Amino acid sequence: MSFLTLASLTKAYGSFVAVDGISLAIERGEFVSFLGPSGCGKTTTLQMIAGLTPPTAGTVVLGGRDITQDAPNKRGLGVVFQSYALFPHMTVAENVSFGLEMRKIARAERDRQVADTLSLVRLSEMADRYPRQLSGGQRQRVAVARALVIKPPVLLLDEPLSNLDAKLREEMQFELRRIQQSVGTTTIMVTHDQAEALSISDRVVVMEKGRITQVDAPYRLYEQPATPFISDFVGKMTRLHGIRRAGGVEVAGRLLPAGGDAGEGGAVDLLLRPEKIEFAAAGQGMVDGRVVSRFFFGSYWLFAIETAAGLATVSLPNQDEDVPREGENVALRWAPASARVVSPEGAEP
Amino acid sequence: MSVTARSSPWLLAGPGTVLFTAFVILPLALTLVISFQHFEPNAATGSGFTFTNFVSILTDEYFLGIFWRTLKLSLLTTLACALIGVPEAYILSRMRDPWRSVFLLVIIGPLLVSVVVRAFGWSILLGSSGLVVQLGEMLGLGFGRLLYTETAIVIALVHVMLPFMVIPVWTALQRLDPSVEAASLTLGASALTTLRRVVLPQVSLGMLSGSLLVFGLSTSAFAIPGLLGGRRLKMVATLVYDQFLQELNWPLGAALAITLLVFNLAIMLAFNRFVEARARKVLG
Ligand SMILES: Nc1ncnc2c1ncn2[C@@H]1O[C@H](COP(=O)(O)OP(=O)(O)OP(=O)(O)O)[C@@H](O)[C@H]1O
Ligand SMILES: [Mg+2]
Image 1 (cartoon, rainbow over the protein chains, first blue to last red):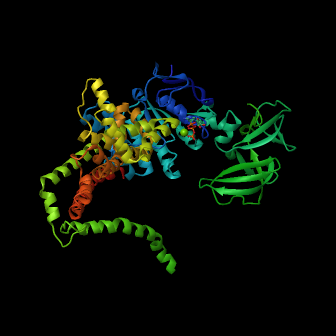
Image 2: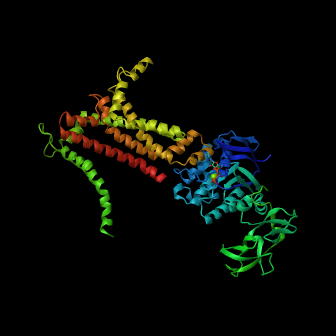
């Protein structure tokens, strides 16, 4: 029996089904992300776990006990809201202390735990400030501290980082992961940022229109996306449309090598991750092309290459400045095993 | 910068300023001037310069009693409005849409009816053969006489002033982030604790402005004490009316009006200082 089990959890608003029979088992201490586009039902799912939205059907079982009918204030789960939802009229320390007060913990013990948790999120100096005197990242940490101080069996985070700028966001991702690992709390985080989901979770749950379409560890999700939607949503992907042949895929009259067995003759898509493609000397590649545009991202370059087979995205680690320029002719090459062949987009996988 | 650009703020503010000067500043200034004049029995306005009007107001038991009653009834009205209006606004903010609009209209609707008509309505209801007294007798409660008592004045004032409490509190409640309440629940607080510790402190500024409105309007209320207090139970506004139109003692009437104004200003400013300074510090 898993620590937290969702069984056929469903939420319908009138005839509109926001969450459609989600089943999922989460282990103790796991960090799980719910990833999906806007409106796919992530928040609704989280709120059903927290008890803030009553499910239309299905159950939530925590540590072997069915908590589906429990009120939110009886569940004892830690929730960090997208807007942080700090109490604006209380100081940082009072915010964090609130949950302990509700648990009737004595003053001295309360103060000690508040101080401990604030130092965990590195906010000890801010204890006497009001939320409006804090930066976005500091507020977010107060919200995490407030949810963690009650030692919840499960921590629920609803897009906790979406209001932060890119730099702070990255820092906070490390911070969240550090805190989660040092406390060991089972954590569920909702996000629509695939990079965030991949970088900090143990497992990623991909949702689409109220349903789960894949549950996997980040690496497997990236390497073996279950649906065309996921392969496009998670990371960048070159998708070339062609016909299955022995040893590869025939695209626009030329055979592009790819791994796997040949189920010859059917229409398929050839999938290539940008980092799996490399540049080759003219005539030595698998396909020739021309650089349409190129972008510099610091640690790597990204190229859009126009080939006879279609548009390809190629990335190159930043080693020196000697890389192809716009308009230059290049040849592309990849290891056949790194190219995936899937049913074409639009068809069911 | 062109001349028009520099003078346009003045031009834009002009009509308002003229209106304000003509209908507020001037009458007030005139009242102030008259309040320092001698009373002359056969002339409409007085003459000379004297403090006697103010001295008699501040020393005469009769006047002081009426000021005290005005203060007491206004405070009672404010308190009752807060006790009824705040929960009312909260329930209102929790209603779903068709009902919310309906009940909001029910609350604001009375504002569309003249105060005089409403005061008459209450005098019929509270009269010795009125519905309220009859009902009380039927239930064996025996309210005794209601009309022409302070209770009647407070009941009617609360009815008239309630929207002025409900609307600012409701506005403040609208601004609350619903997830803040949800956060309080997930931290283990009951609905009641959430209301007391999380919701109410955040609407305290709305309660403050509501209280100031209700208190200010109550101290200067005229029609309701006039109709429900009768000849005997006077409040300051009815007293001013008497001095001007019955005794024809304009200087004393003016002095009473100025005293009420100063007294009102002082109480409201003090109250505002006290509560707002605290709330602003916290809520920003
Ligand atoms: N109270 C409601 N009444 C009707 N429909 C609702 C209600 N709450 C949410 N929905 C609908 O349910 C769907 C899922 O909403 P939800 O908030 O769970 O999306 P989400 O995945 O969290 O999206 P986002 O990433 O934009 O936050 C949406 O299409 C939304 O319009
Ligand atoms: Mg959401």
